[in-house]
Length: 401
Image 1 (cartoon, helix red, strand yellow):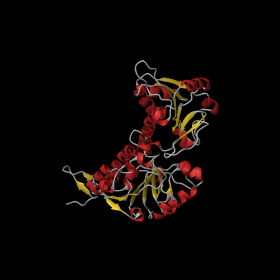
Image 2 (tube, one colour; image 1 turned 90 degrees about the vertical axis):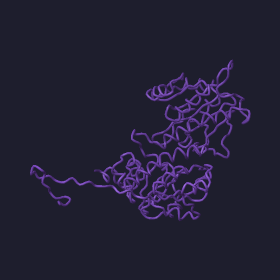
Image 3 (tube, helix red, strand yellow; image 1 turned 120 degrees about the vertical axis):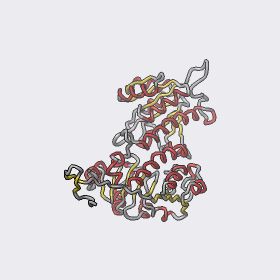
Image 4 (spheres, helix red, strand yellow; image 1 turned 45 degrees about the vertical axis):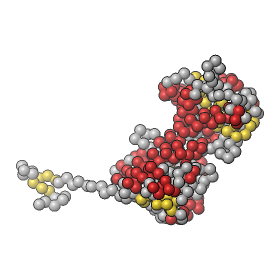
């Protein structure tokens, strides 16, 4: 009997090298879900259904007590799904894989153990260099939600949160048009014999597209502005319903703002601050009681009059116009957002376990590799390295086959 790796003779006497079958061994994962400490963050990284899926496949999940409260999940929901409820935050942070929604604070990084794997948002513009240095000292392997891609090249978590923000923005505007919120007393959309309300949307990306879909479904008249003709064309193709589109022209935008009841700011900046497209003078010319929803406020805002607000006190009135400038709108519908988040993370965790660990999936899955910004304490993101003047090694070099 020939030994693996040696030459064997075929029936025809020809020397052939035996092909060795390399079996990948599934790995049981140890996953921790801590309670979010960031102000007004109500989402949770895994729903009980996702926990049940992971546990039924041989993985261990630790959930800090109260982690699901913001999304209306109880400790009992997680316990019934097979999770271990942990009452000591430090113990949750000893899990091999840590799942957070917001980036960990410096205090939370201190609780992490060496060579821990972290999945969380990165929120680059809010971080300081010490944040990355602390993670590097822990020799952490960290992946950001803003970088993880699927097989179609889409960033699924950012996409799903943008969908939620776009749809929610219209529903929020509808509330503030009503008398209940001391608005103009309009029904967003209209009824037979009554002209529809007019909605202006700035930006034709995912947020703008879903805002337009929701507004049209409610019967509103919608105008969408963007600097890109191709994005406007794509929005029209996706909606397949009557919608006016226009490239940004100050005069045309100004006239649209005078006549509308609702404006949605849905412009995203690739780098730096969101461009300020609506001046204070334009806001002064809007109808009294009109509603501005500035979804772009986390990048500085699209309106000159925008000021950061909170879920507890979400609006202010300036020049007679209601301004809603709350960042993290998806946290307002935390149950839906948590479902959407865990729908991405639970299959990814399953794949990591099936392939035998994080290194194997980083070698085989370029989409996951794109989300990597630290590997065993080594910075792997060129963008972060150049932005913070830190040494880095490309993930493509580390995991090149």
